[in-house]
Length: 106
Image 1 (cartoon, one colour):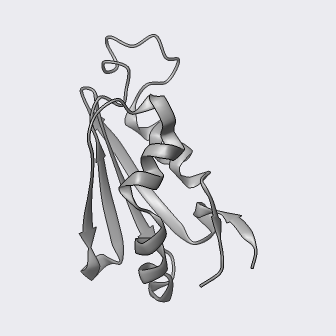
Image 2 (cartoon, rainbow, N blue to C red):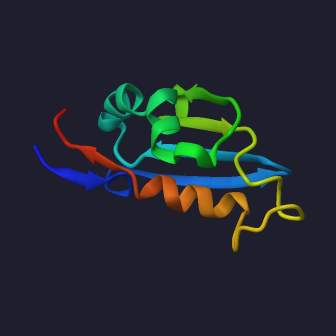
Image 3 (cartoon, rainbow, N blue to C red):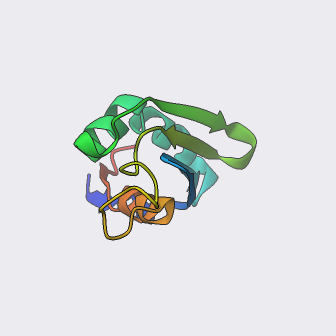
């Protein structure tokens, strides 16, 4: 078993609308998708982002694309026009997500 960054097993797309961040995670190899579904729970994502995401997190599975869409409300410090964060846009959330460490014990 090894520990790797999520971007070893997946790639992502992200964006934002106001104070909501949207991050889609896609398995690089379809054989890893079921493993990613098991480990990328809403609870784990909430723990990973800590106090950065203050609202609800919803995960939508997109099995036909071997991906998951995470919608995180109140995640951008009020949105681009209200936040004091240097880069509060949703693009940075996708990059942060890819730095999550996961075990390759599947």
